[in-house]
Amino acid sequence: MKTKCKIGVIFGKFYPLHCGHIYLIEKAITQVEVLHVFLGCEQLRDLKLFEASHMPRQPQVSDRFYWLKRTFQNHQNIYIHVLNEEGIAYYPNGWRDWSDRVKAILAKHQVKPTVIFTSEQQDVVEYERFFHCTVKLIDVNRDFINISATQIRDNPYKNWQYLAKAARPFFVTKIALVSKQNQFDEIAQQLANIFNTVYVNNGYSNYFHYDHYGKIPISVTADDYIRIAKLQAQRIDEAALNANRVLFTALDFVTLQQSFQNMFHKEDQTLNELINKYPFDLVINYHDFNSKHSQLSIFEAVLEQVRNQLN
Image (cartoon, rainbow, N blue to C red; front, side, top):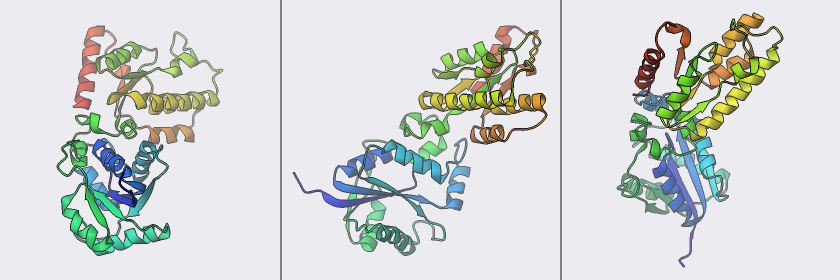
């Protein structure tokens, strides 16, 4: 058996993290004792990449860091570092300033790399020039995993199978079908079946036990609302882990906040925080449909809205 290289380094934006990145890192760790992964970030560049993409929302540095940590949580010898690239000339320029910033982080952790792993042939010469160590290429032509972050940003749902499992919940499309007396619950479950994904039960309705006028009993407290909201958020988080690109539910937090305001004549900060943390991509309200229409016509109208959202 050949002696392992002591310390390896990998650079990337991981925007988003995908199977090609994972293959690169997993293959690299078999060749070294310790691997340092640098997550490069630059606010304006990252924003431009997002604006040119079809991603539903912009991944933040904290999201990308979490994806890496979660994906490689069982590797005690992989270390993730955030590399702030603000103020450095954009690639392919700025190599000296960029390498100096990398070296500062390495020095802080008393790390002297012996090998750099990359999939980019054009970077080899500059890595050798500025870091004076071996550079190893892995899957340059993407023969093993034929995907790029650019392709995923352009269409994350078409390339769903290549997204890192840890990153998928971030990209799950969340659709709420809201109705006062559970008229939409069955359709939401049907849609989950059709799209081979998950449905999140409406614990709100079950908990409050609407009377036949659709009003909430006066005995319900503000704490009840917050408890249900937090449970709903937990259920959404759990469902997103197994969702196939989209999840359906019968409750969104904007609707819950509106109900809270009607009941208590004020907003709740916790509900506002949940609204911001769990933005829904599509909310369909039963009251927007004519109740005299057939179940079939309502079903088809809802399905059309969902299809338009997912295309």
